[in-house]
Length: 185
Image 1 (tube, rainbow, N blue to C red):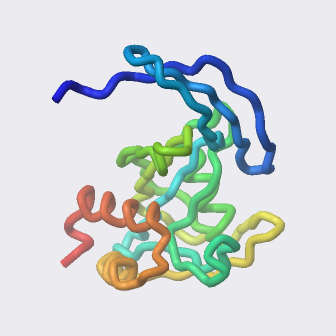
Image 2: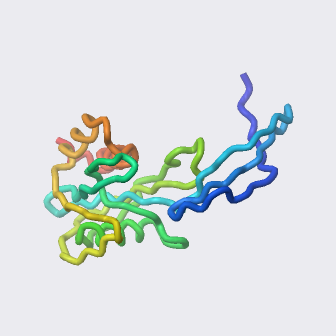
């Protein structure tokens, strides 16, 4: 079987602007057999998930209400990368805004396509090693956050056991385990 072809975009138009993402209607055609069709693609700035680890090996998490889930979620801090912002700096900013923890050494662990079927953005995972509490938080208008400090292995076990785990948060925890196996006895 031959490799799939790369379809080409013939035209695109903004379909809906939804504040944190935009929906585009894109018309594609197949380069060989000339099939064509309209597809909807969500465009958003990239996202970042921070993995803040304290000097004593605790992982800083937030517990917050998630509107899509309509329930509480426990996950690493993170958010939208501002236009032109470096994902590593965005992780540092989001961590301090959401948790009041700062400092340490920042390392990009990797990136992924959150849902390549319909989304055009990337999610970046950043380890923040050696963070300390500063007490200064600046949550967004609709965020109500509880800050937690847990053993990374317990966070991963809880995430694996829950049917409501934020999928990107789970992937972030798996990236942390790969980068810092010493935190997962």
